[in-house]
Amino acid sequence: MKSEFIPPIGRIREINGQCISLFGDDIDTDRIIPARFLKCVNFDSLGESVFEDDRLTLNGRHPFDLEENKNATILIVNSNFGCGSSREHAPQALMRWGIKAIIGESFADIFYSNCIAIGIPCFTLSKTSIQEIQENKDNKFLFLEIDLKNSLAKSKDLNLKLEIKESSRKMFLSGEWDATTTLLKNENLIENKFNDLPYLKF
Image: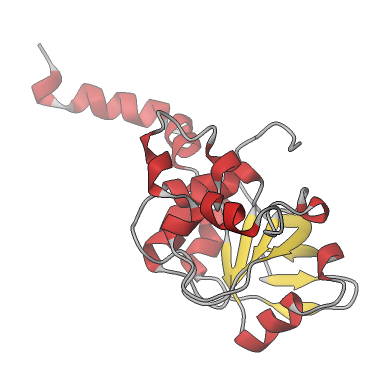
């Protein structure tokens, strides 16, 4: 049983956690969260249904069902992850399952942007480095420490230089990715602007 979901807020400077690997290119958003779950009123229950159809097919052998992965927080993927429709439910489902960061060969652009907007950093590595992680015989116990300031990830045996868009990196370090918190911190500016708008005066 996962612990109670707590969304990220403010500055994100480091992420430490166990890795979970998915194999395969072009894993689309419909596989991440099937379309029938899009009717939800909010995102709260989506974590339970992430990769629902893949998990049913594998009958308990999907990485997201394995006991050794139940506390994993860093997802390792291959190329063009999150392709397909632009549904924001896909990163929301991953986050509510417990994923706090994703490392892959490449990401679909809209999926990447949706992840950044809810506080999930997406890093890229070469195909060789991703395979090294995925094929590590001790992968189920691989624990990575991610340093966003220096774009580094390290474990007992690995030292990886991660790639992330500089604009995204700065947003995480400053907390500007968190639009709600930023908005609340500028309440006075919003009120002043509201009072300055002539068409709102009666």
